[in-house]
Image: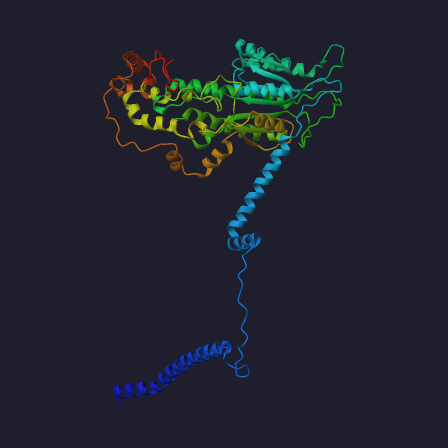
Amino acid sequence: MSADDQQFLDLLSSIPNQIRRYSGDVAEYVDKVVDQAADQVRDTLSSAPWVPDYMRPTVPSRPPPVVLVPLSTYERVQNWLVRHKILTGAIIVAFGYVTYRTVRHTKLTHKPRRAKRARNGGRLEVVVIAGSPTLPLTKSLSLDMERRGFIVYIVCNTIEDELAVQSLSRPDIKPLGIDITDPPNAGQAIERFAAYLQTPHAAVPGARPNHLSLKSVILIPSLTYQTSPIATIPPSSFADLFNTHLLQPILTIQSFLPLLTTRINPPSEKPEPSSSTSSSPSSPSTPRVLVFTPSIISSINPPFHAPEATVCSALSAFTEVLSAELRPLDIPVTHVQLGTFDFAGFTPARPHTHTYPHPSHHHPHAPAQSTLQWPEAARQAYGRNYVTQNASAIAAGRIRGLRGSSLRDLHNAVFDVIDGSDQSAVVRVGLGAGLYGFVGRWAPRGLVAWMMGIRKVDELGTWESGSASGGSGSRSVSEKSNASASGSGSGSENGEASEFIAVGKHYEGGHDVWKEG
């Protein structure tokens, strides 16, 4: 039998199955139509008045109509939570965290913070602040510590600093003259201060004298820095910067290390019960070291902030090493990373008094004006990005439109560290301190630079002979500055003038311009 015959037989064998399926469909359709017609006839006859009752057909009972009842608010919320389980979990976690932070902040805000006093009311605890008395932060912190019952000593290097401390007109805020540039004299000053702590003092004449105890040494380095491209910063200015902003704080801490490590403990005396409780495992008389640094710029390291980023990073590393060296001696070291604060009342009225005073923002057009004093090559390479970054909303450690944190937050944080309530190695306080730290750790550098307005420079200036030594490339600044730069470039053994773009010191321009001398 051929293949065609087999295919024909298969077709014949499938015909009964198809007939059965089609006939079943037709029968079901006919039954459905007949049932509908019967229902209509039954309904019509049951409702017709002319049909006798004994002949009227009985209508079969039908299920009652479904009534749609609207869902309650609780049921709608429950259904939404079931459909969005992941989002619900995230909301619960965020709400719990915010609640915890709010309760903790409220509890810490209402916590009484007072220094310990003797039974006769005399002050017992001494705090040393190593910072310029003219800094707003030094003024506010010293006044707050004195108000809480501490005897505050501010390290003074010059007569002007002592006069600034005396101008505060507080009997318990006193100058501590230490010339750190002269190590022998600095050592003698520390010895005199140690002898002062070991000598009993009476709060008022005739009262019982009490011994004083050193509670903390607070280091506040300079918090203001100039901004400028690295190409326009002379090496001598870098040297001065490291000397005043980095070396001086390090030498200050070094001068106090003999006093900190000897632990001058006064004779046992029962002080008056204090309202503040300390959870520190160390001795109550153990002094604590606090090192303040601005953290916003050093967290993201933006362009044109090489001085601040370099110094703050070096101070952070120094603080870590100091903490590691003093930890076996049971001397706590805390690194306080600062954000921005509202210094109204401690600084002159300026458009940006709510943040830390920054030289490039005293005037809205200062960055653009300062670039006019740069050499042509530097202005063409860096000018546009420099002006754009200074005008961005997150430039120079500030967030445009937001006021700085209250100084009360800083004062409370410092007191909690001193009395041992906060034993963290790093304390971040101030607007932007935590946010910029998170951005610096996790955000891509390119994204941060783009948000600050940094864009690619499409066209660079052409090389001209003598531009590296302040020749024709810097003629647009001034003839005098070019002459001095060229002369120093030919007469200097180190070739300093060939390493930077000189700007004459006779120019009285913007604060962002690095000058000679």
